[in-house]
Image (cartoon, rainbow, N blue to C red):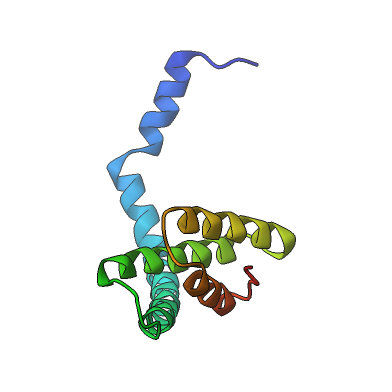
Length: 120
């Protein structure tokens, strides 16, 4: 059955009502904060490890450090969304992309090791 446009509009207006949104957020706020706290702590630890790997290399330009950190962030995101062969394939695409942008393959390989990936 096809719904009329006016009915869809009414449902949408009810869904985005400020009081309804506020009550939904307040009901889940503590759990949302806990999840975010755990994930940001995990991400900060990984960023520290990536930075340690990058700074251990003798010839890394400082303006490229944020790019290497972005590689780590993207691999972290993939790790949360995928697993197995899909994760490995997606991670290699990310690493190839950043290699194409001029990052050093040896450093990318070390970063990949932090995430359990073997990168040639």
